[in-house]
Length: 208
Image (cartoon, rainbow, N blue to C red):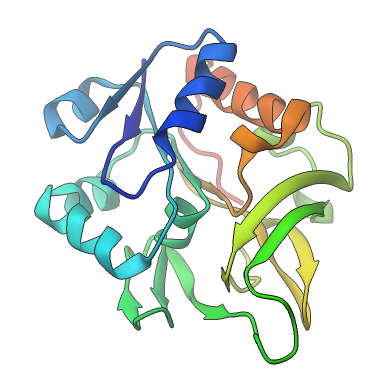
């Protein structure tokens, strides 16, 4: 069973609908005992970092997330919160991935970055299990104002405004996607299917 974390910042309806289409076994919860029983976690998110982190602290989920060895998939804000900090606020985030998120320059480009954009796989990570059966330069659907830097944990990138940013990241059992796979048609569905199959296959370390 996969737990979808409910921390009042998640795009729960669209994520759960996507899981329904996959006929996946899931539970929406913020209960630590339920998370302890789950095989893996989807960490979705929309909105602002500061209230999201406040809710995670109130629910006792910050420590749990930092210490879990279960596969975790962060989506959009959920991915961003895996990093050390964001200039939104500014806000200190979970610190699982190194790096600080910056905001796109609204004086030079439309913000938020919204719509379909290509995702380019890093040459060293084309065989990452999240990318199985997904063609290079596939389009996914993005909605975000802040972007993650490229680091050694970057699995795939996208391009907007002044340059490239991390579209997919991974470190140990943690994975994150900046786009919304649940809104990205067949390719997004394949990525979510890959995550469920990764979980059921018993993989625990998928480090970039």
